Image 1: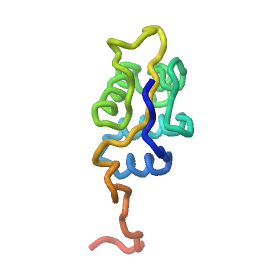
Image 2 (image 1 turned 45 degrees about the horizontal axis):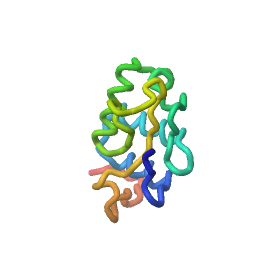
Image 3 (image 1 turned 30 degrees about the vertical axis):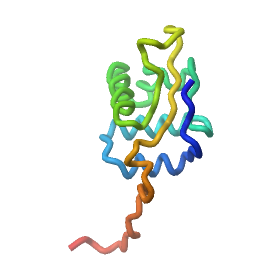
Length: 122
């Protein structure tokens, strides 16, 4: 069982995702996972909410592409899952923990842009 980061905060995680350089599909899937995760940032093992086929319907993508995006989010450090090769039972969908990559967890990593004035950029 993977423990979520201490002091997980959904709003802080979502703001870090929005401020990141993630690609559109990665960001979209991250937002869906954040919406479905519990208050601790966990999607439990065996849950249908993180199953690729279910996510594919919400994202209007092929399940293979969704699995690839999940792998990309994991490689980038935004989610954590047990290793697929050691996951037992193999028939059950692996749990997902929403985590902060090292760069996003640094102090001041939250978006700090000044408010937009409404004036066109020159």
